[in-house]
Length: 79
Image (cartoon, rainbow, N blue to C red; front, side, top):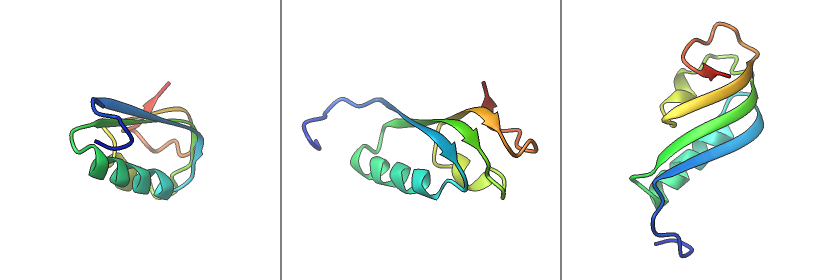
């Protein structure tokens, strides 16, 4: 139990831009420490990810993006 939250099943992180994803990966790691069974999704408006998505995708159950700047990325759900 952390901060009175006891029944977390799924979390959605929302932000406007993701460059390389370092901040999101650190956040996901900390959340998994606090809530090991939680499902974590990421929604970003714009993703650049110059090195591709291999690093960031292992931290999240789903990654949703409205605008992929790197059009070679195929494993992120573009909406």
